Image (tube, rainbow, N blue to C red; front, top):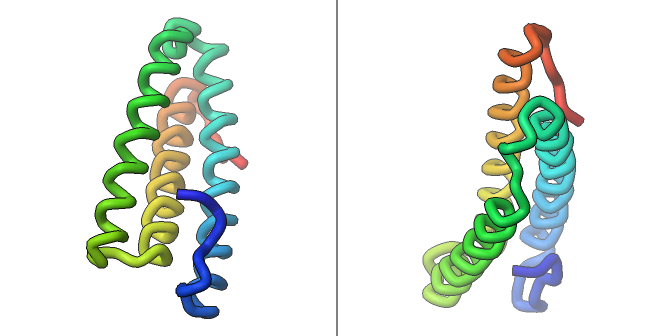
Length: 110
Protein backbone atom coordinates (compact mmCIF):
# COMPACT_ATOMS: atom_id res chain seq x y z
CA UNK A 1 0.00 0.00 0.00
CA UNK A 2 1.12 3.52 -0.59
CA UNK A 3 0.52 6.73 1.30
CA UNK A 4 -1.65 7.83 -1.66
CA UNK A 5 -5.35 7.38 -0.97
CA UNK A 6 -7.80 6.82 -3.80
CA UNK A 7 -10.55 9.37 -4.46
CA UNK A 8 -13.31 6.94 -3.44
CA UNK A 9 -12.24 7.18 0.20
CA UNK A 10 -14.30 9.65 2.23
CA UNK A 11 -12.80 12.83 3.69
CA UNK A 12 -13.09 11.57 7.31
CA UNK A 13 -11.32 8.35 6.23
CA UNK A 14 -8.57 10.34 4.52
CA UNK A 15 -8.08 12.48 7.64
CA UNK A 16 -7.90 9.40 9.87
CA UNK A 17 -5.53 7.68 7.46
CA UNK A 18 -3.23 10.71 7.61
CA UNK A 19 -3.24 10.57 11.42
CA UNK A 20 -2.49 6.84 11.39
CA UNK A 21 0.33 7.30 8.88
CA UNK A 22 1.85 9.90 11.23
CA UNK A 23 1.55 7.45 14.17
CA UNK A 24 3.17 4.78 12.03
CA UNK A 25 6.11 7.03 11.09
CA UNK A 26 6.75 8.06 14.70
CA UNK A 27 6.66 4.50 15.98
CA UNK A 28 8.78 3.25 13.04
CA UNK A 29 11.47 5.83 13.87
CA UNK A 30 11.45 4.64 17.48
CA UNK A 31 11.79 1.01 16.37
CA UNK A 32 14.72 2.06 14.17
CA UNK A 33 16.38 3.60 17.23
CA UNK A 34 15.75 0.40 19.20
CA UNK A 35 17.33 -1.73 16.49
CA UNK A 36 20.38 0.54 16.40
CA UNK A 37 20.78 0.16 20.16
CA UNK A 38 20.48 -3.64 19.90
CA UNK A 39 23.04 -3.71 17.10
CA UNK A 40 25.49 -1.97 19.43
CA UNK A 41 24.72 -4.57 22.08
CA UNK A 42 24.82 -7.67 19.81
CA UNK A 43 25.86 -7.23 16.18
CA UNK A 44 24.84 -10.80 15.23
CA UNK A 45 21.21 -9.68 15.70
CA UNK A 46 21.24 -7.89 12.36
CA UNK A 47 23.36 -9.62 9.73
CA UNK A 48 22.72 -8.24 6.20
CA UNK A 49 21.29 -11.49 4.80
CA UNK A 50 19.02 -11.98 7.82
CA UNK A 51 17.65 -8.47 7.46
CA UNK A 52 17.23 -8.44 3.67
CA UNK A 53 15.39 -11.77 3.48
CA UNK A 54 13.08 -10.83 6.36
CA UNK A 55 12.29 -7.41 4.97
CA UNK A 56 11.63 -8.55 1.41
CA UNK A 57 9.40 -11.47 2.40
CA UNK A 58 7.41 -9.49 4.96
CA UNK A 59 6.86 -6.67 2.47
CA UNK A 60 5.64 -9.05 -0.25
CA UNK A 61 3.36 -10.95 2.11
CA UNK A 62 1.83 -7.86 3.72
CA UNK A 63 1.24 -6.15 0.38
CA UNK A 64 -0.43 -9.22 -1.09
CA UNK A 65 -2.64 -9.86 1.92
CA UNK A 66 -3.62 -6.21 2.25
CA UNK A 67 -4.59 -5.93 -1.42
CA UNK A 68 -6.67 -9.10 -1.16
CA UNK A 69 -8.54 -7.94 1.96
CA UNK A 70 -9.24 -4.44 0.61
CA UNK A 71 -10.25 -5.71 -2.84
CA UNK A 72 -12.70 -8.18 -1.27
CA UNK A 73 -14.15 -5.40 0.91
CA UNK A 74 -13.22 -7.17 4.14
CA UNK A 75 -11.31 -4.17 5.46
CA UNK A 76 -11.12 -0.52 4.49
CA UNK A 77 -7.99 1.47 3.83
CA UNK A 78 -8.67 3.41 7.03
CA UNK A 79 -8.82 0.18 9.05
CA UNK A 80 -5.58 -0.98 7.39
CA UNK A 81 -3.64 2.17 8.27
CA UNK A 82 -4.99 2.15 11.82
CA UNK A 83 -4.00 -1.50 12.27
CA UNK A 84 -0.46 -1.06 10.96
CA UNK A 85 0.08 2.02 13.16
CA UNK A 86 -1.11 -0.04 16.16
CA UNK A 87 1.27 -2.84 15.18
CA UNK A 88 4.32 -0.60 14.91
CA UNK A 89 3.47 1.01 18.26
CA UNK A 90 3.39 -2.51 19.80
CA UNK A 91 6.78 -3.25 18.22
CA UNK A 92 8.14 -0.01 19.71
CA UNK A 93 6.90 -1.04 23.17
CA UNK A 94 8.59 -4.44 22.80
CA UNK A 95 11.93 -2.80 21.95
CA UNK A 96 11.55 -0.45 24.91
CA UNK A 97 10.94 -3.40 27.22
CA UNK A 98 13.81 -5.45 25.80
CA UNK A 99 16.27 -2.55 25.98
CA UNK A 100 15.12 -1.65 29.48
CA UNK A 101 15.88 -5.22 30.58
CA UNK A 102 19.32 -5.15 28.89
CA UNK A 103 20.36 -1.76 30.28
CA UNK A 104 18.66 -1.92 33.65
CA UNK A 105 17.17 1.54 33.00
CA UNK A 106 13.78 2.58 31.63
CA UNK A 107 14.21 3.11 27.90
CA UNK A 108 11.77 5.30 25.98
CA UNK A 109 12.33 5.33 22.23
CA UNK A 110 11.39 8.36 20.15
